[in-house]
Image (tube, rainbow, N blue to C red; front, top):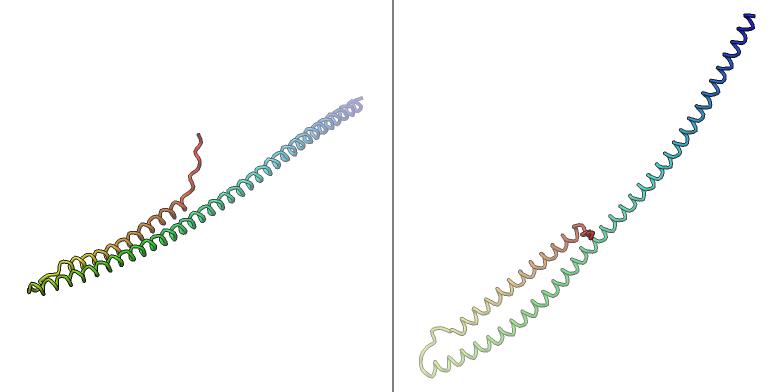
Length: 181
């Protein structure tokens, strides 16, 4: 009987051990399935993150290209405006030089007429001319005209260069973002 009781105890122990092993295997299986499900969710989340990061990088690249294009166009516009201002300043200078030439021609004619009249009156009165105030005036006016022309050309050049520099700087600074109301 001891042997049969021992056999029964061993069988019960083996049965309990088998049941415990099956329960542990089932529990491990559920844990593994839960871990696989969690891993799948994490992989999907990571794939979404990578897709979002790739889209953000693409949009950032596009925005940078648009900013480069804006800067390039703005600088091109500034240079075009400089050329137009330079052309207009040259045209104005040419007009000024033509007007100054006409004025100088009329002044030369007036000086010649004044000298001729003076020579006639000096010959009639018998005195000699000591100073020619009209000639001095013509000389001073001619010098002033040349200096004014040089100063005006320099001032135009500096003004145009400054405006171009300012426009180029504005082109290279980031565009102001629209402020939220």
